[in-house]
Length: 295
Ligand SMILES: Nc1nc2c(ncn2[C@@H]2O[C@H](COP(=O)(O)OP(=O)(O)O)[C@@H](O)[C@H]2O)c(=O)[nH]1
Ligand SMILES: [Mg+2]
Ligand SMILES: [Zn+2]
Image (cartoon, rainbow, N blue to C red):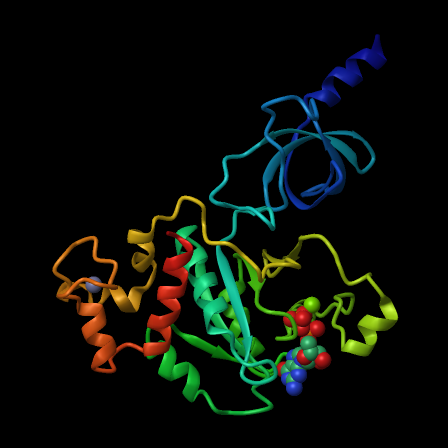
């Protein structure tokens, strides 16, 4: 009787938590009571919503550090491949040098961020190698605030910290720009896979990991391997692409048509701005490339 009573009381104890990682049907959920390894209630039932890393969930603890996810809170946003949810900000990390800035990738990430109502932060690493920002200024003009850091030497990292407090921030960028080094510099941990090529060879395949939310400054940093080969959102229509280019939108008053693609239309404020040098020709060419993916 007493046992039954205790059990039924326990089962009414649910806790709110956040899924830090999701892997093979197991979910690491951080709650105020600590970390719980959970399974989904009614797993694999048809039509059942699957939890992803980043979800806020209600769990029912079963025993010490184990429990069941009872429900998933509505998501602010959700990305696929990689699967993650409830992202406030995206650090789009590039290197000022080594490797060269991949502007097409940065623009792709900017569109994805804007589309999902994620605030983009353009961060340029390896400032110890060069102080030359000309290429970036030529490309983006003043459309986006730009952060310049050296993750290795922890230069400029303090300035970024202010932006991250209380927010969930994912980090994306091509391989080699310093994502793992930056996460180490921010969180002070050393367990990220910062790898020189020789390290990677020594370690074999062990650098492939899953998406991980790291509690940080009353917010979260999201370590997401593979956040660099993304497709544009499935529901994005070509005629809406330029809506995710704030610098293009500033010129769209000069377009004759409201749904101007800025390609073949004879009267186009964006094309005029490209010809007169107000907008970067290279950014415009990359826009055309992304647009062709949507057609
Ligand atoms: N010079 C310089 N090298 C850096 C800096 N940050 C990272 N690196 C180096 O760049 C390489 C790639 O860094 P890593 O963090 O593994 O990049 P990831 O592939 O984006 O995770 C490593 O050899 C790092 O030591 C930096 O601020 N300056
Ligand atoms: Mg890395
Ligand atoms: Zn136009």
